[in-house]
Image 1 (cartoon, one colour):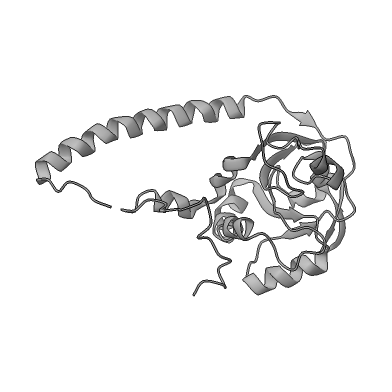
Image 2: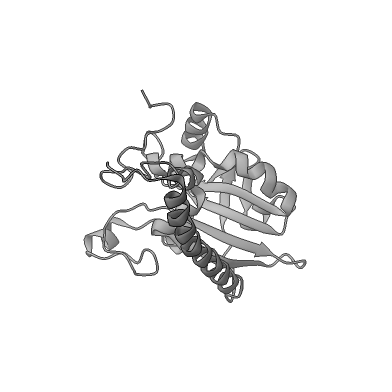
Length: 230
């Protein structure tokens, strides 16, 4: 990688030009955030039950006394020996986030289809403290379009990322947001999939500032589970 080497004043000129573009991006991001907040909500009518360390719990119980819930749809299917490396990379950021989210009326946790015993074994191996529950035997993952049946995959098309996806697979990542009102009703307010899940990848934000940027050959091929780096 080669870059021109210039005087400090020339660098300031180039940096100020970039700052204008960054400010435009910030303003646009704020505008999109307002549109996100203005999205209509969907009331959750189905009774989902999750396996947790505290026993079976409904979706409404996962809020843990708060009115807002963020869920990482973590790719970890029944029969897998370990969770997805990219989802693990996402989850590495959760414990730090939770220290602040919990004090701002937001609960954040992960949901996977793997049985709870497999989830717990992997969570302990990775040293994570956040809550991670199992939707094993539930329609939750399928209804939120992050898990797909073999028949759906065999059809040649899956309705992932609101239909804007052209790859196949039975498990995919996502992040969903929920709100619980004073009457105990739960609403789905937002979901993001595909590259939208980069919202959890704070490491990428820092790499974008580094001299080599993300420096990726093929997507996230460089990412390892944090206990598997050399």
